[in-house]
Image (cartoon, rainbow, N blue to C red):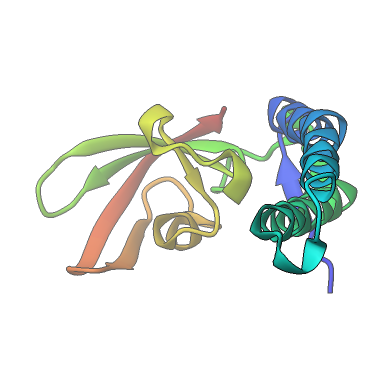
Length: 158
């Protein structure tokens, strides 16, 4: 079952670069490590060979997963985003009802999430709670220590 993921132009470029790095640099390194281990003699008692084969298997799984993500990736045209409600790539200004703290988050695909830069995944509890909401609405979001109420004060494009 394939799962569509939405990316910004920057995020899709980063995914392609990572995939190319794994295929063009890491894959040949893994093959070289296997060849070197094979040259050391009896394969039935060669732990280095087994480790190299296992590392190659893990690398191939990672490449396959990234290729699937890339094939199912969809580029979002940021200029066409509706700012009347919270969507992927919306930048949302919020006020925490309990403490009055203001926050600004941009909702992005899981692979582009980076809390340090204010980018949260649409799959996160907060992201899911905000999707579809409009300015002035309250989002009640279940978090590990209870429920937090966030009032949406502004929606803009990222």
